[in-house]
Length: 291
Ligand code: NDP
Image: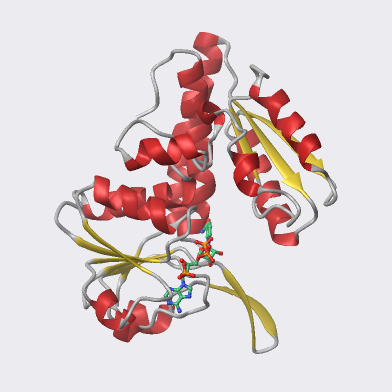
């Protein structure tokens, strides 16, 4: 049976460290980091995420600014709000909750955020900085995965990593981060041939597919570390249940270590968002960054 990587406990430790640093900033520099979250529309899952982000932001001693706009908000209104936040010195991090309603151009909106305040790390400048190994704002979900992997393994150098999924928000930045830690990286996707064989070559297997329990035990190399990014709501036995992209029962019988869903990658994502906001506040004020 695999070791369970406890993302919930890890995230609590990260939040404690962030809170301690925020308290010092307040005392020594009179600085309170601020995170602005923009939500357009009423997508229920997005509302839950935004609520959790706001709550945890306040809990670590930062200021939280929530901007809730109606689903029919036009592009000019949204861009004007982002411009205001870009120029507000009390706001160090800006996050536009995705997905945006279909009439809005997500790339245009994300690229209108000041890259220094882009705590989600989705701005084209941050993507380029990460890809070229320069100091970037790193997307929160893959950053959380990397932190758990480093914590579990120490060095990742020379390990074979397979990332299933090539989205801009998870798969691609995850692959960049693993490459940065000297893994040999394969990115698999819906056109990959013989996915089982590809996955079975992985010492580190990251599943970011958006398909409930798709990665089964027969796809896992014995002893491998499995990181399950997926969050899928399914109906089972008449109840709504949260499951990952990995079939936990069969995969955990083969893997050496595995993240559960819930309680794995999810909590780390928000913890990393808070850490990124703290980093952004320090950089904006020329102060030493948290380690
Ligand atoms: P996307 O839908 O943007 O990307 C899914 C990727 O999986 C695509 O690259 C797609 O390939 C690939 N894929 C789909 N079907 C298959 C298949 N049968 N075989 C191999 N590859 C396949 O999803 P996201 O990256 O946004 O999210 C992935 C998962 O992570 C979701 O469950 C999401 O809810 C979750 N998530 C969790 C977060 C957290 O905080 N824990 C944060 C963000 C996401 P192709 O490109 O060829 O279509």
